[in-house]
Length: 268
Length: 342
Image (tube, rainbow over all chains, first blue to last red; front, side, top):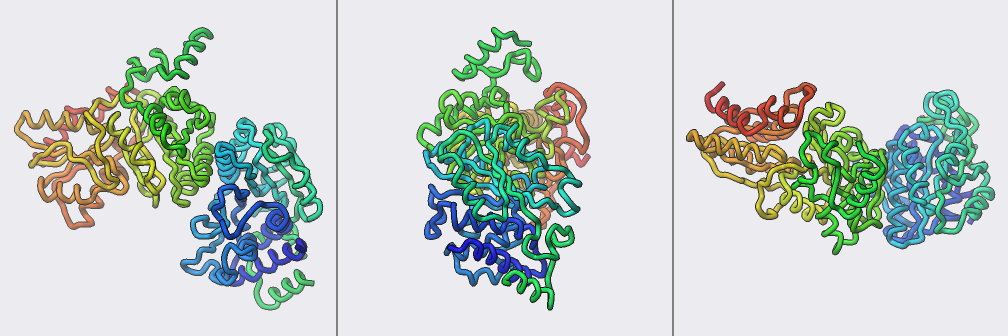
C-alpha cells in the first residue's frame, strides 16, 4: 500500500466532497491526512466486514470537523460503498460535517463538540480491559482542542486507571479559527503537560509517514499500564500552498479555476 | 469533623456497605444511615450478579449516593471518576458504546446542569444506554444553596431528544426503575431525591415507560406529581378527603415520554388538574402537562405548582417545602384555591 497515495486521496476527496456541500474544513483535514493514512492503512486492527467486531481497535476523531477526510478512507477500506459519499451533507445523508456513529459503519463514536473524545476513549479503553480484550483505543485531537478542560480530566483519569491500551494523537497543526494556537491559547509544552499527568510521550513529524509508522511500532506492547500520547507536528492546510498556516481556510469553498488549480496542485 | 480513626472506621463501614456520611455531616441532622430510598448501590449490586453489562460510576460521591454498596460487591465494575463529572458522563458513553450499561451518579445539579451537553451529545444523540442518575435533586440539599440545587433539570432534560426522563418515588419505585432500565433502548436521566422519601409503594411496582401510575382515584380534581412530591401529594389527598374533596393522584414518574392519556383522562374525568413538582415551574412537569392539554384542545381548571422562578432562600429542606407549600398541607391548600377559583 502506497501510504503517500492514500494521504493524497484523503486530500483530493476532501476537496471533491466540499464542493458538494459548498463549504468545508479543508485545512484541518490536510494537517492529519498522513496520520489518517498511517493509522488506517498501516496500524489499526480492523475488519470492514465486521464493523462491530468487539476486538477491533477503536478510533475516535475527537476533532470531529475532520470527518470529511475520514469518510473516504472508510469507504475505500470497504465499510460502505464509495458512491454513498456523493450524498455528503445533502438532506438526510448519513454524512454530515461531523461523524454520526449511528449511521456510518466504521465510525466508533459521534463527535463534534471538542474536548469530549478523550473521555470517550478512556471509557472505551476501560471497557476493553474489563472485557479482557487487547484492542487499542486511539484518539485524534487537535492542539487548539487542548484548551478544553475536559481533555485534562480525561488525561488525569487515563493515567489513574493505568490505561496502557489508550493512545492519543495530537494533530498539532498550530492554528485554530482565530489564529495561531500559541497566540489564542497556548497549548505548548504539550509533551510536558501530558507527562506531568502520567502519560508516556512521543513527538513526530506528522507529515512523515515513515516516522509515524516507526512511532506506532515503538509503542509499548498492548497491555501496558501507561497511556501513550503522540504529538504530531503538522501544518494546517498542508499540501495546498494558499492554505498552509493560513487562518482564512478553516472553512472554505473552492470554486471555478481555484478548484481546478488546487486539484492540480494536490495531484501533481 | 472526623479523626483519622473515624476515617478508618468510615472506610471499613463504606466497603462493607453499612454506612454513608456521619450524622454530623447530614443535611438536616437526621441519621443518614436511615435513607430508605437509597437502594441505588444495593439494587445495582444485586442486578449485577446476573448482568455483566452493569458498571457504576460516581464522582467522589459514593458515600452520598450509596454506590459504595455496589463497589463493595463489584469493585472491578466500579469507577470513581473523582470530582470530574463531565469526564464521568462521557466516559460512561464510551463504556456504553462498548456494550456496557453504565450508571453514572452524582448530584442532580452537576449531572443535569454541569453535564447537560455531555448528556445530549455523548449519550442521547448516539442513542446509547447510559443511565445518568441525578440524586439529591430539586432543593433537597436545602441550605447547601443554589449551587447544589437542581430545580431546572426536568426542563432541561425533557427537551433533549432520545433521552428518557424518569423520577424515582421511593425505594421500591427506584428498584423498579433500575430493573426496567437494563433493557431500555435509550439513554436515561433518573431523577432521585435525597434518599429519605417515605414509602409510597409497599411492593416493587410494575413499570412501563410512558405509563403513569394512578395511586388514588378521585372525581373532584387530579394532582399530577412526580418524585419527591408524590408522598406529600398523597398526604394532601387525605387532607382533602377529610373535607369532602376527592382528589385523584397520578404519579407521573415518566416525565419524558409523558403519559398523555393519563393527563387527558384527568382533565376529562375530574375537570381540574394540579401539577406538583419539586422544580422550577418553568419548563418542568407542569409545563409538560400544560402543553399536553392545550395540544389536545382541553382547558380544565389548571394550576402549575412548583418552585417559583427564583433562587430559593437558605433553609433546611423541610422548611423550604413548607415555605413553598410543597408539603402535604401546602398542596392541599393550593388544591382548594384551584377548586375555589382563587
